[in-house]
Image (cartoon, rainbow, N blue to C red):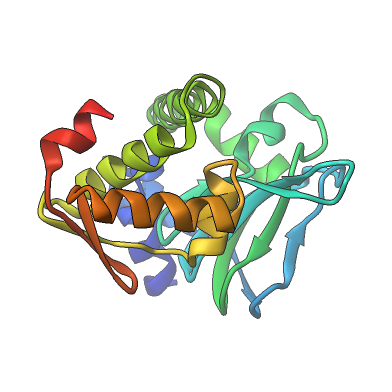
Length: 221
């Protein structure tokens, strides 16, 4: 129980809740273990509850008719996912797969909705999280539809720099092949763009570490 409370307390979704309420939320959570590439749920599955990552990473993705994978988001420790369908009663709109060995907390829909109904503070936290999630997806859709691939990569590097709290370098948290899917391009195209930006002195690629040599130029792009 203590470990579950610590995970829940660190999450933006439940931040600010009193100790008693955190314990009630933790009492609902069911810990589930997943190995790398295990499916958490598939598009169209009934949304019987939502999940939060305790350890590991989970990718949310859609499959195109020709079998191409489009990653929508990648979630790490403390981040919830699958919560939107829980409230409108529709099936999950995408697939979720563990990217590595992961521990997830599962919150059953009916019990959690009952708890939210009687807890205004929790309801407000849910609204804040859903609003943040909407802004993220709006930004991603704008990037995919309006920006060329170099601009998408620049925007992602800026996003990582803000997440990691530094402007001189970032560390990629996913393989480049999955990054290509997240940015809506092919691995070959992404590799060419990395090379071109390196030649131009904007970045320097050292494996998973990307040195941001010209941060202002990244912002321009």
